[in-house]
Image (cartoon, rainbow, N blue to C red):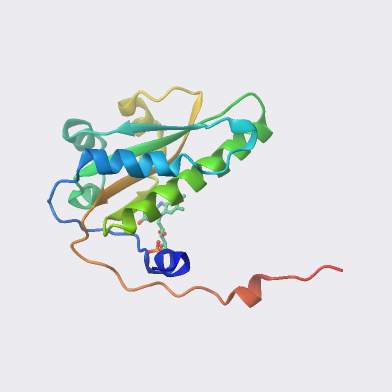
Length: 161
Ligand SMILES: Cc1cc2nc3c(=O)[nH]c(=O)nc-3n(C[C@H](O)[C@H](O)[C@H](O)COP(=O)(O)O)c2cc1C
């Protein structure tokens, strides 16, 4: 499949099959994800695998769609505000890489900001050194939602002299 088709066919999956995921596969996709661009090679991402007990404590409104794997993706803040912004951008690239690597093998993902609240950060024991960029649930999709149309890119482009 062309990479552009992989990108456009990926959806935010809200309901997963209970079938387990091969942990080695997940690690393979995370490893591929870590080839994301990152300024000064800060490699700011860190991954928390969240087990069922902790998930229940977070009490997410859709219970992570019943996904077999739930990960919280953190980004190290670094020393300056510029570094923090760059690190969050790099970690977003990391997440997208992971989602596409998984999707290329039929595994769907759900990106939520469920762990950004103070309460969730406390449950997950996340220190002030980190931003939470997303909670990524992964598994085989039970349902694939219809695509949400995008604004034609021509409307987003300005040509400067
Ligand atoms: C930073 C970020 C946070 C998000 N948080 C949520 C969320 O809390 N709940 C949710 O349903 N979707 C969340 N999403 C997913 C978007 O809603 C989803 O990507 C968008 O609706 C487009 O759908 P698609 O990814 O299926 O094309 C988040 C996406 C990003 C990039």
